[in-house]
Length: 266
Ligand SMILES: Nc1ncnc2c1ncn2[C@@H]1O[C@H](COP(=O)(O)OP(=O)(O)OP(=O)(O)O)[C@@H](O)[C@H]1O
Image (cartoon, rainbow, N blue to C red; front, side):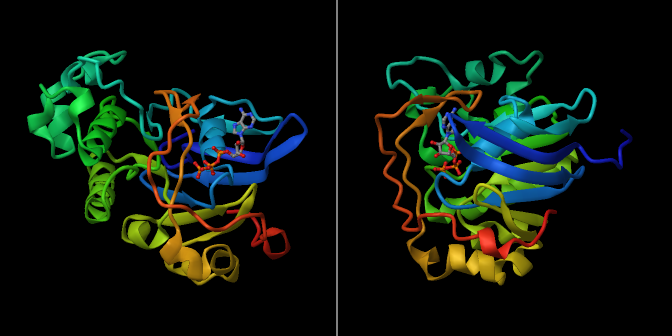
């Protein structure tokens, strides 16, 4: 593939586990330097879709083509850090990645002062910046961010999305992110995929926010829309336990109401 060709192409992707169809008929392309946001209710399959596209989970139908040698940066959903873990931010940034310049990596996310801080002492917003710094450290061609504002207060969430747009401009990378608030992420997104087991609607954010399928899915519940987790993820995005509620507000929508209203594939 050349530079103008997609970073990733997915054709009719599907995943069935234990007789349950988690995702089906996903066809999409991710273009260089494009910010694509995946939205959808809890359990819609957003993280699973990211994992399929990254090659961390194998689809049971369809296929994914990634550019040869594609450099990926992945920021999983919030990590659970053991409060007794003595690791510093600087050390964490260097784990498993060669030649990371800690000062540069932190400067890139506006957090140069955090190099010596203990990971366990970081605030929610600081932790998200550090995870973002780590994902960006290997100068990825595609940055994949699973709910990058988790644990960040509402005031700070817009800043994180601005930062993501800055990273895209600086690194020239594509960005694929999961968000629960289309309105917050709208200004920093080129394209939106609304997912609930399949792609229910897609397009420019303004277009999607007015789409009847989107409105049916989120509509007047948007103000109440929040997110509850009963699990955590490790660096590869794997669920590592299911004991703790992160204290996010609760999403009130349930069920897949979208089948009758498909808008085709992006
Ligand atoms: N390995 C697995 N085995 C069985 N079921 C799974 C597996 N991984 C995910 N699931 C199920 O697939 C569904 C989609 O999960 P996924 O984490 O992708 O949803 P999500 O849209 O990211 O949800 P959330 O907004 O809550 O993070 C859930 O019902 C989940 O329990």
